[in-house]
Length: 259
Ligand SMILES: Nc1ncnc2c1ncn2[C@@H]1O[C@H](COP(=O)(O)OP(=O)(O)OP(=O)(O)O)[C@@H](O)[C@H]1O
Image (cartoon, rainbow, N blue to C red; front, side, top):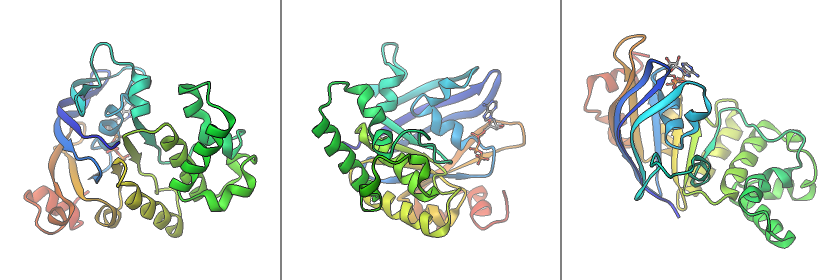
């Protein structure tokens, strides 16, 4: 299920402004990769270009290559909607459809892909996805209540259930815990840890302890100066990045001397 992402020479623009310059990296399947770096260095922009989500921003464009196993996601005949169902996304602020029930939130994307799904198939998928997101026990008695009635941490796990219900191979998470309290954060971190058996996971985080706790590999991005594009400075095993980074810039950032 999990797939590898290979990026080569990716540049991302907002109009004429180059926000990300010449990034190449491999994101390994069945592992967690963290993106760290100071504010504005292009982590979210780069993340969104991995499933063509930047295309919903007017004027945004990307150049370069992104392969999902063998599929060139920017290929001429490739449908961005298909790309986003293979490479799902979870955002900083949990965004369940507010008036929809918990049940319908989970099944919404999967129904778009398969409108002929039977009631029992849908029931099974809702349960499986909520169990996978470690939310089933908390909501099984109130599946028909609105998603917006859940706590922030529960809403974020609901969004994870919704993203996984379409059976993606990759999950991109953009600061998924930044709006959550420490207990809910730990619940999401545990979940990320368990989910990496089945998915390729990428997480953008400002919290370096979090990157150290949850990720196998870490990529550090930086800007050479304000207004310049963000670049990938270094990527490696998380342990090595936090103890023996190769670049001085990385060391300055992780030891808090910068950014
Ligand atoms: N919709 C947009 N239109 C124009 N410029 C944008 C847009 N979104 C981001 N940018 C610019 O692109 C650059 C990279 O922003 P991005 O949000 O990717 O950085 P980031 O590393 O994720 O920052 P943060 O950690 O603060 O979320 C910044 O200079 C930002 O101002």
